[in-house]
Every structure is written in C-alpha cells, then in structure tokens.
Length: 372
Image (cartoon, rainbow, N blue to C red; front, side, top):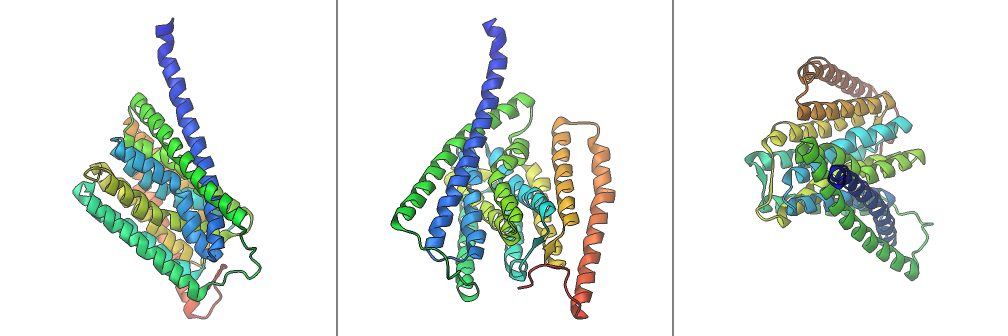
C-alpha cells in the first residue's frame, strides 16, 4: 500500500511546494514594494519616478529570484522562459486586466521615452540570444543599459516632476521599518523562488513539458502576480498612470537586471533554446511594439484594446500548451491566428494611428488621456 501511495504523495508534495513558493513570492513582493516605496519617498523621489523605477523594479523581484535560481540550478529553459513569459504577461494580461477595469491614460513622455526603451531592450535581448546563449558579457551589456535608463529617468524627473509638498516626512522609526521590510521581502522571495523552481521542474517532468514552456506559462504568471496586483489596485484607485508605468518599468528591469544578472552569475551564461529564439523572443518583441501604437492613439489604452490584449494572451498560452502536447488542433489554430486574427489587428491599429495623426495635424482633440 505504501508503494502504491508513493506517486500520489509525491504529486501532493510537488503541488504544495509549488503553491507555497508562489505564496511566498507574492508575500515577499508585497513586503518589498512597501519597504522600497517608503525609502524612495524618503529620498524625495516623485510618484511617477517611484512607479517607473522602485515599484516596478520591486515587483520584478520574484522574476529575479526565480530566474537566477533556475540558471544556477541548471534549468536555463525555466530562466529564459520566466523572463520572456513575464514580459508577455505584463503587457497582455496585466495591462489587459487593468485596462478592463478603467481605461489607462498614458503620459506622452512615457510613450516618447519609456516605451521605446522597452522595445529597444527587447530587440537587444533577441539579438544577443541569436548565437544560442546570453553570455556573461551580454549580461554586463544588459545591466549597463538598465543603469543608464535609471540614471536618465531620475535626472529627467528632477527637471520635470514635482514632489508633493504635503508629503509626510519619514521618521527614523519608519525608515528602520522600511529597511526591515526590504530585507524580509528579499528573504521571502529567495525562499519562495527555490520552492517554486523545484515544484515547477517536477511538474514539467511529470507532464512531459519542457522547462521553457513551464517558465513561459505557470512560472511567468506566478511571478507576475505582484505586477498584476499593483496595476489592478492602481487602476481601481484611479492611478492609471502608475499601472502602465509599473508594467513598462518591470519589463525593462526583467531584461536588464533579471536576464543580465542571471547571465553574469551563471557559469558560462544562460543557454537559450533555439525554439525560444525563433518564436518566443520575437513574440516578446512584437508585444512590446504593440503597446506603442495602442498607447499612442489618444494616449489611452481603451477597454476594447485591453480586451484584445487579454484575448491574445489566452491565444498565446493556448498555442504553447497545444504545441507542448503535440495536439492535432495546433495547425488549424495557428492558421486562424496568422491568416485572420493578427492581420486584422495590425490593420486596425494602423488605421487608428493614421486617424490620430490626422486629428493631431488638423488640430482636433485627442481621444482621452494625459497629454503631458
């Protein structure tokens, strides 16, 4: 009887390990966000810069913990899949769900500066991975790009953003609590990452799925929960600009610090599966590019655009699962997406961009949003 129970017991332990790791990641991310946000306010950083840097970077801490741990544990597919999948999840699912709650107004500065940086770093990662690996030197390049972006953002904020005058000062006791929150958040993230990587690897082996697919789906959604929670709460409270800034900043951080850091720390860098180079990395670039015209049309992510994002994420996840299972429905599903859905969407966005350009040249008012 004990021998018969052993497989089911192992499955139960694996599931519990995966869920416990996910809980610790979410809890650690929340604690880290609160502590980091308090320290940032104490340093006099504006809310916009806090959203684009500290909050977005802190909510990406689960990705950092999981990716570095996976790379050092000999699971490069999980490491790459987590970064690429999280960036896809952030735009399509996180912004999609947030935009369904409330249309997301975007500052023109975000469209002119930060979204192009997100697109540029995505393209850079794809180019660096063409040789089949993100080497330690590549990692240094990615981290240097991130550092330059942070310095550029902070210096630019001092010229354009105003810190609220009524912002309450942080007492020494509050600062100590913020520091303890950051330390506790990091500890929870490291422990949660180890548990989740272990559980995800066991699930991948049991289901016959590759580490890459598990990283692109289950782990990517799990580590993106802090971004989802932050952006949804921001949308509910009416801080829609924070929702978009959180996603854009997190995606840049995922590539620069998470992928770059993993490549520097892992011996020999992080190998990249040829399938990821051919399909998943180009999808990440396409998703980043798709945000530009959507945000550009009236500086708002409308509800129908958010719904389109969610639908495309569902289609992307369905494709990954069908491909992993070798299902017969994969071929007709791919045909429908390539021949009908994607061209129609591209045409619609092109028409919207043309329409908005015509309105702006004619002096017409933009749709809605925050122009400056």
